[in-house]
Length: 111
Length: 114
Image 1: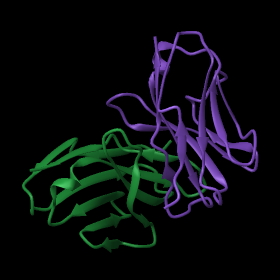
Image 2: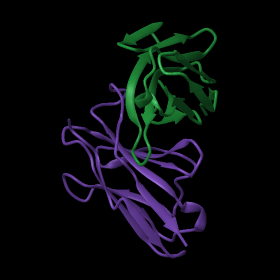
Image 3: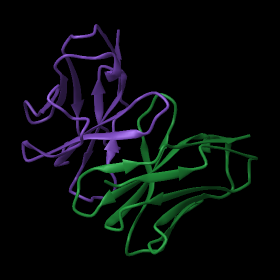
Image 4: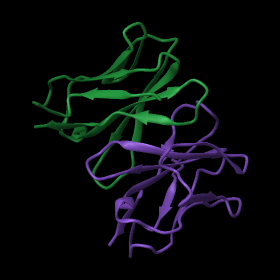
């Protein structure tokens, strides 16, 4: 099955700096890659996603890049703010499947 | 903004007891899912449900689990005989179609088996 690896597990940045979280996936047939933000006591909330036919997508301070050849994708948050502090999960979905396969999460702290 | 609603937010049960976790997906969504997250671990897929039947399930989703859509709004996960290792956050999610723009997750039910 699909295996998603996520790094780093924790990330601490100064307010205003950028944060980058990286994920790799194993199944080349995966074609959908969402990123979720999870705040304490809440469910995962979709913040951005990308499909395999696109290399980069940006939404204000958040961007995701995808390298299909290398099977990795990254989340970039610019001008970080304290409210960006949360756990971020990457995920991948096999093209004909229903399941999202999640990474282990990155705890981001913006101080 | 439409939400996925889960009840209860916290459930404590004794080992061996039956538990039902409830979810109200977004009304125009057609695909429904259950995931779980053991404390400190990744979110894991359990099962997906479409057109009143299971469309995919993981190895975790064995005979001690079942899902049901008893009416037009609710989607339930039943654990027939809980074990200590079932203690986790259980998240319900729904999507408008397969491969849609993201899955909307509920806030979860924390299940504690004692």
